[in-house]
Length: 227
Image (cartoon, rainbow, N blue to C red; front, side, top):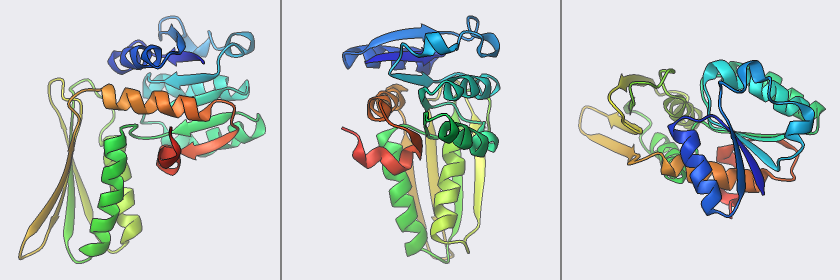
């Protein structure tokens, strides 16, 4: 496959490395080369089997509009843009493109989502709190993963309250702690990322999955289908 990676940040650079380890050819375009999505023309995008975006909330919507309007297959690891999701979904459908988005491409976090759902069902009278810790440069708070966890818990049990506490410290790759507490006891679920590699691995596997497809999916919907 030939993959286009948008973003030269820490995660984007690691995605490039992992994609090459998987045997793919990679082209990287940074935000300085792609201001206002100016590099994402139809002839340029036609070269690639998939596009992976790890840019910023400010850049990602323009990138998506350009990619989807030209029928590209896009994996989006950037968060902080979901107020535009319905528009992007409709654009992907109109242009026979493909969009695979997710707040977290770590396979371990996907497992956390499934276990959290079971916890919400098993402890319906507990109060819930999510504490998420990320690196100091992360711009969106709460994290997309924390918001997804809250959604997972409340979808499983709409009666529960879920508080989110956000912390930004140093170079932390990501810690998500779910606490369920009653008068009698407490239950904790925790996922800690030791590096960004888990996110990169998941994103590359997502790009492999989306190649040649048309449609729009949340990563939670397809993670069980990855090779």
